Amino acid sequence: MAQAEKGNTVTINFTGTLEDGTVFDSTLEDAECNEDGCCDDSCDDGCDDEGCGCGGHESGPMTFVLGEEILFPQIDAAIVGMSPGEKKTVKIAAADAFGEFDKEKIFTVPRSDLPEDLIPEVGDELSLSNEDDEELEVVVLETTEDQVTFDANHPLAGEDVTFEIELISIQ
Image 1 (spheres, rainbow, N blue to C red):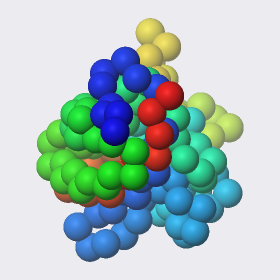
Image 2: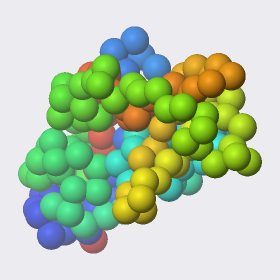
Image 3: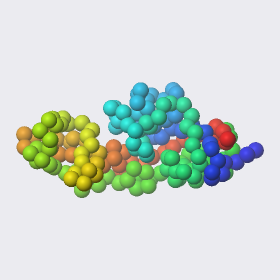
């Protein structure tokens, strides 16, 4: 039977879970994901960010070129040598997945530094930009009359993740 090699176009199903069993992403149609392809609350407003962990794809098998690291390098490495129908479990530590939670990525900005028409509320997901037009994705943690506190950590930062993978086919 054929085995997957780097450069092959492969089709897989996968389910990504946190240590407590929470599903954060899945290609399985029976997974409890919302219409944006998100299986948790980290991207209720939709997400197109590659590697964000929010899905950003419709349910159903995922097809990609093995070795292009569309998901995580550990998943690509696990698929190499697999045959269609074979299943594997891949555990990825937080540091190698979405990164460790970094307290330094929580910061407070005076409201006077924000656009006048911006009225942030706790839980809002925003994209802030600086003078160089560099964008930073943040979540609003706290608001006061004078300032707003943001968190620039990935929503899944600090989480060890597990992927259940099934190789469907090799093209």
